[in-house]
Length: 277
Image (cartoon, rainbow, N blue to C red; front, side, top):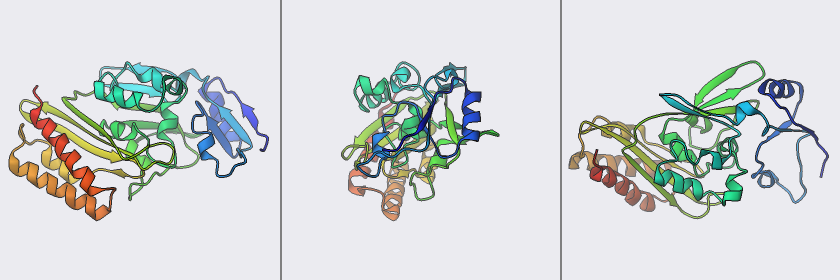
């Protein structure tokens, strides 16, 4: 095991100065994935380790009329009673990630920036149009969560950028469907999460998204557009067209087990049909 210099910045400014000055830095908040990133039986870390859990800007939660914003070092337990986790299914998904002790350490930033696959909350946050704030030593930028996936749906983490905040637009969710599939999700499992969210406004489906994420991330924008602005309940012809689009797309991209996914997508759409607003 090599020896590393450990830094404990107390402000975001101090952290950015450290990142500008130091090379080959390993950032740690909760550290629950620390052992999983090791490629051999001997622990190997970067020459500099920066522990960011004591920075208030990365631990705060802000809410406005339009958006809720989480600091990237907020623990999963700290998210339990705020949007979107007041929804029963979303809270159940949060609880399924680990024991209360694990959730009291694991951070939302570490959860999203896991480089080997997409973890449990990724599909939910993608359905809700989460935006991520990244910082470098010289500037800040905001990206949609899909910035973390490449064209084939594989995880894509750009080096040299620090995730500081996660912002989710506050929106009405009239139907939320969440289903975990396969085996374990973390650290190397074959599992995935399927999430769909819909908003119904005056007997019209005003918003709909369906995301599947595990080893890869998947979304069919064209199928979603066939549903958005359609009447509620969905006419049979639209249901049939959308299911055909999902079937063709999943087979074309060779995404996971199509015979397992299609009944779940159908179940999600049927749930929208039964929704009352």
